[in-house]
Image 1 (cartoon, rainbow, N blue to C red):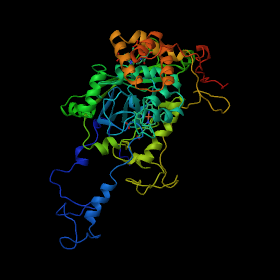
Image 2: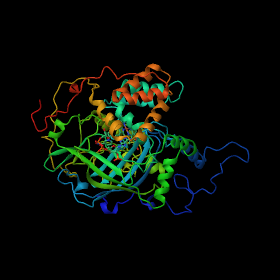
Image 3: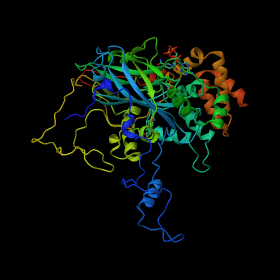
Image 4: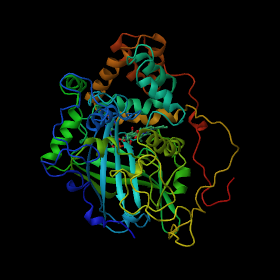
Length: 527
Ligand code: NDP
Ligand code: HEM
């Protein structure tokens, strides 16, 4: 029988009575035996050695010895809360996912915000992108939105991710963060510039966690019941607008209150305020995608609002703090591959790699049964042939552990086929993207059209404060060339601010015409 819970009851996770016994609970060992004195250790007499028979004492120490699990290899420092996602607009014309079947449908949600590069004790106000991961518990399974607070990313070739991340962390010898390796990577890989422009703008130091937007960054696919699909980008925009800290304030808070973000989020929700985001999508038909100036699978690009307006779909509300941070936030496990019928991944290679990487790291960080942990468990009953493994909580009782004809499961087919979706054809090959003029257009728009004069001043000063800490003249000059390819004045202003020589643009940028365009021959015979 189904243990499914009706969606309308699921406005928040988890219920207090599941985890918190009333105050004054009887003190016990982990096996439930009452113990009179928690500080006492069994020994011979007053000064003799301790006894191996003292289960309470060994239980206490052995559990303590194992308290730490690996911290996330990235996004280790974070804060989280629970709430819900509510569908506010009808989008059944483009998506068959169960959650969108009716306006007013709700899914309980758990959100975790994070910085990326720092360890779990690092300062919340560091200049860094912010992770913004959202678990939606829908009736058709968990749908995780593992988003950042920026619409683009530093890379579009997934093999660069470990290299990139290593340069944002600590030097293997000095164990110090290192401005040379930070800028060495970015200047050698100029497709990073769009994200670098955002990172060193006001958006790189958000004011806590609850005044920022979230973006899917990647392209996903929403599929209709008949199999037709659109490409989508998801945006969650915070009510009240994006608020930031100046570099000076962020630096000050890093010293006076490194947990500023955690504290601010917790206290806001504790006061009964409900941080809220309006959720929108941008959509593109397959035909539009092939005509689009940029490759929709290129994570360093946005879809301009003018051409692809935001369409509202719902709202995300946070209304409950965790009762226990470790159980509900440290152990929450998001993956872009936790998808639901009606939503498909695109062929974006970074997304494709992430589909693998997250469950892989969860099996390492939390164990093979990570999806059985209460915060990760779906609201509908899980029925499959997975059994056992470390930390099994639910082993599906007496149900057969193979595809049985005697006691069969029921199988729910997808309402659509993907026959008419992309047909990709080509030789297997090792592929790496190249830098073209297209890579500088959107960063240039940010500099020339989006930043105000004051924002430009802060940007130059923020870059100067960091790039000025690099020792390698080669690295500094190369990064100044990347900035000069965006805009010569921008580069000159940074050069002047750090007392470096002015340099011209990169000379190895290919013409825009050589950029790879998106062509997937949707619905065709392939090519
Ligand atoms: P618009 O000119 O319509 O709007 C500008 C966008 O930039 C708004 O979404 C605004 O967010 C956001 N923004 C404002 N300041 C910053 C900042 N310091 N860093 C990053 N984003 C910021 O956008 P277009 O679609 O015409 O694109 C122009 C440029 O805006 C792009 O090249 C891209 O760099 C940037 N951008 C575009 C987004 C998109 O999805 N199209 C999303 C975010 C940025 P807000 O709504 O809070 O004011
Ligand atoms: C966390 C890998 C790119 C958003 C993580 C974690 C890994 C990882 C291993 C730790 C997860 C955990 O321990 O639970 C990668 C790889 C990438 C990549 C291999 C590229 C190849 C991205 C991008 C985004 C993103 C492009 C956003 C659009 C996040 C978020 C978290 C995270 C929000 C934190 C999740 C949480 O709060 O638990 N990533 N990542 N990552 N990543 Fe990525």
